[in-house]
Image (cartoon, rainbow, N blue to C red; front, side, top):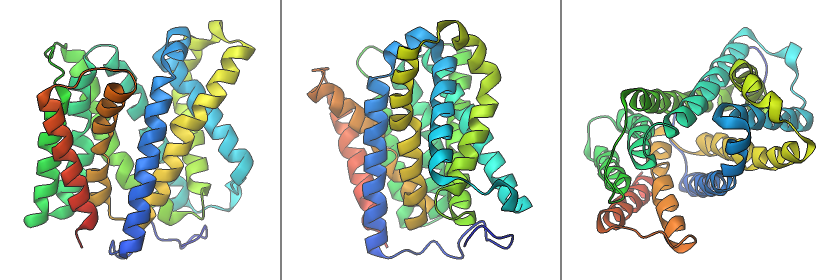
Length: 293
C-alpha cells in the first residue's frame, strides 16, 4: 500500500478478521445515519438550488474541505493512481446526479428498490455459487417489500432509467472505492476523487445554482457537505478496507430500513405490514452477512 507507483489497486485477499468486520459494519451504520440526517435537512437546499445545483455545491465544498485537511500530493501519484481517482470521481458525480434526477420523476420507494440492485449485485457476485448467496437474496426481498408504502408505484420511463443508472453507478462505486482505498494512503484517494466529482458536476450544477447563491445559503451547504457526502464517503472507504465488498453490499441494504424506521419514530410516518416484514428481512441478511466467515 502507499502512494508510490507500485501501489496495488486491490488487496491480495478479502479475508479479514472478525474485529475488522465488526468495525467495518459500525462504520457502515454511521455512514447510513449521516446520509439519513443529510437527506432530511436537504429539502430547502434542493428547493433553492435545484437537485443538480445542490449536488454540485455539496461535492465542491466536500472536495475543498478534504483537500485542505489531507493536502494530496498531486504531482507524486502514478498513472494508475490518477486513473483510479478519475474513474471513481466521475462515477460518484454521475451516480449522485442520476439519483436526484430519478427522485424528481418517480416515487422514492420505487427508486430505492431499483437503486439497491447495485449493492445487491456486488454482494451476489462476491459470494458466488454457495449457501452465502442466500444473504443478497433475502436482502433483495426485504428491499422490495420496503419499497411499497401502500400508495402504489407510479413512475415514468426516464425516471426508471435514471434509477437504473444510479444503481449501476453504485455498484461500480463500491468496487472502485475499495481499489482507491488500497491504492492511496489515508484519505488521499478520496480527496482526489471528490475533486474530480465536483469538476464533473460543475457543468450541470453551476448554471442551476448561480442565480440563487448567498452567504447564508452557502453556509448551509457547507454543513450539508459534511453530512453528505464527506463523512459517509470517508467512512465507507475505511469500511471497505476492513471488509469484503460482498458483505458491504449487503449492509448497505439496511439504509431503506433505517429510513423507514426513522420516518416511523421521528416523523410518525406509518409503516405498512410489508415494510415491517421487509425491515426484518434486511436486518436478518445484514446480520448474517456480517457474522458469516
